[in-house]
Length: 201
Ligand code: SF4
Image (spheres, rainbow, N blue to C red):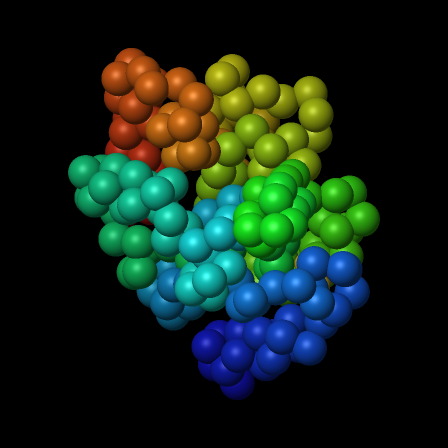
């Protein structure tokens, strides 16, 4: 069976999964995207947001556009070099305004991460990447431990691993575009991506 066939089977399992409450409320499952036969890196984000839930694809909102722009600048081909997934396959949200049906993203709950981890691990096992990118402080802390902080460990291979695989952390694009607004941090983000490009050549 090819990697793609194995992923297709796993995706069908996910589509039938309603282990968490958010499973019943999703518009679309966000399984992941990329070509498993050409990728050498799995990028892991935290969870789908509004646009991801609507389109069923990871990193397609504003943060995704920012990521695409910087991947391109670093010479990384999103479709060929990366398989992008999240720790959760369904969007965690709270209702902000029930009359208008406005939803707001919320962080994944511990039990949701635990419930969905099996799918993520199977994806990684099937794709068998050279490197894992942990995108953002939440993915870093939830997969490598709370002692790590993104500002200290981003862009370095020092000591980071996930389930025995080498891992590297990068800032989350949402953090850069919504909270920091710093050209300096954007430059660091680009340098980290260029370093990753040098590792996967
Ligand atoms: S988040 Fe994962 S475990 Fe929870 S319902 Fe969705 S697919 Fe299932």
